[in-house]
Structures are given as structure tokens and as C-alpha cells.
Length: 341
Image (tube, rainbow, N blue to C red; front, side, top):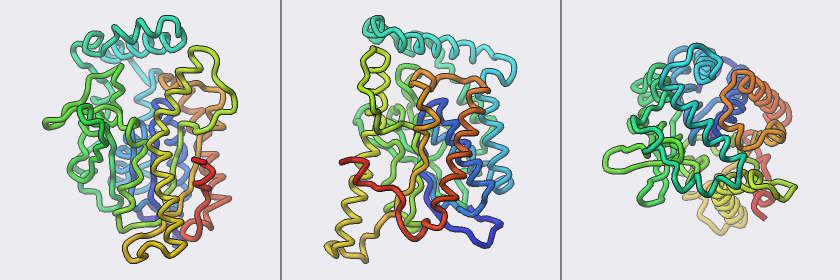
């Protein structure tokens, strides 16, 4: 995305999923756009990261950085339960989300619940107000023909268990809903002959599309789910939360390991530099902002909570720009080996 500033650097943006915690990512993007010195060659998003990505690109195509910022704020305001009147569809989803949130807080009930709860039973009309909101806010034809940044949206193929990356004209409301389809809340999204669930299971977010791209060698990861926890979980809810975090970080850790492996082989001149290139990894993470917010708050859609996370994201983004803007295009600022060893 072009910048008004003369001194700007291109970067690839990777946006992790995390439900309502994606408001942190909104804050990160908002500050990056306000600052204007980093431009986005490509954006890869999963689940909430995919939602942020398409809304941002739609807004940018309409009115540049300011348009992207305005569109993102409008999106999160309208997602919030405190933003206006409650439509019938929202009531259904509120009941389902409340049902699952309470189940996560009562581990003794969870096994029985998991055996009987299904969106095919509790949401027989397949109501998803988020889809209606997305279609009302985003011009997908504009997003599909965007020239400023390439877009990659990840989902998980239900039948094969493999990742599917939607790009170009494949980026539709269906693709974004597939990327954000939690199987316990919503029916699998059918596109063509395939069915898809949340992309976080196999790519959270997918980094490999950047490797074949001819854009920037720098990747900025906005990470919502913490990789490390110091305390061993002991309660039922804590165990469920930690299993969720590990599951949704597994594919990311594999890709970080692959990047480190290729980078080391290139540094040792054991790979053909004309066919492979190093990738410089950077990260803005939400660990500090979310240290007192468990996994159940991923379903907290209050406007006050969104504002809190947005402000934390802006603060983290500002710190990254202050500490590491000069490193972009020069050196990596994320120690990959420390992440997976």
C-alpha cells in the first residue's frame, strides 16, 4: 500500500486469528496506517486476521490509509454487541456463544456437551450475522482487483485436513467465512465441492504464500495466541485454553522452523541463492495485552473490550516502529530458533 511519506519500506503482513482478540490486530494495523512508513506488499490472514485484512484492503482501495482506518473502526463497532439494536440473527448467535462460553468455564460438563452440541442442531437456519455485516461493508469485487497488496486467506479443508489458501478472485465472503468458521458454532462453509472450517487449524496465519511472492523479504507477524506460558494449567478451563493455544500455534511453529532452516542453509551457501531467498521475520505480539484474558474472552464482543485491545495494539505497534523500523529491510528482529527450540 503506497504511503504519503517519502521514507517508507515494504513489508508482508501476517495476521493471526483469535476471535474477539483480533481487536488487538485492529489496533496494530491502525497505528501502522497512521504512521505510514510501512507499506504492505502482501497480506496473509486467518479467521479474525482474514476479517481485518479484507476490511482494511477494501477501505484502502476506497480512500487510502485513512479509508482503511475508518473502515476497520466501522467494522469493529458493528461487530460489537453494544453498537446498536440487536437483530434476531444476533440474538441466536449470542445464545450460542454464551452457551459455549459457559461450557468452557465448566470442565465437568464439557465432555457431555461436546458429544451433543452441533451448529446443525442449535442453528438449523445457519444464521451468521457476521456474514451479513461483511457483505454490507466490503465490496469484494474491489478487494479481488486490488493492485496495492496481494491478499491470501487461509481455511482448512474438512475432508482432507489440508490448508486452502484463497487469493485473487477466490477471495469472496464465503472464503472469509470459511477462514473464520469455528466448527462448534457454525456449519462448515461449502465452496464448490469442498467444505471448510477455520483456517487456524492448518495455517495461523499461512506464511508460505510469501515465499513464492516477488515482493518484500520482510514478514511482520501479528501474533494473538501466546506460544509460551510459564504456569502449567491445572483447572479444567485452563487445560482447555492451553490446548487451544497449542493447537492454533502448531502450524505457525512449523513454518517458523522452515524459514529458519532455509535461512541457515543460505547463510552457509548450501542452497542456490538464485532460487531461494532469506526471509526476515518481525513480530508484534499480544501476550502482554492478553495476559489477564483467557480463551473464553475470544467471545467477548463488548465495545469496551474492543477498545481496550485496540489501544493495546496501537501501543505495541508504536513500540515496534520505535525499536525496529530501522531494522526492516536490513535484519530480522525475531529470533526464530528461540521460538521452537
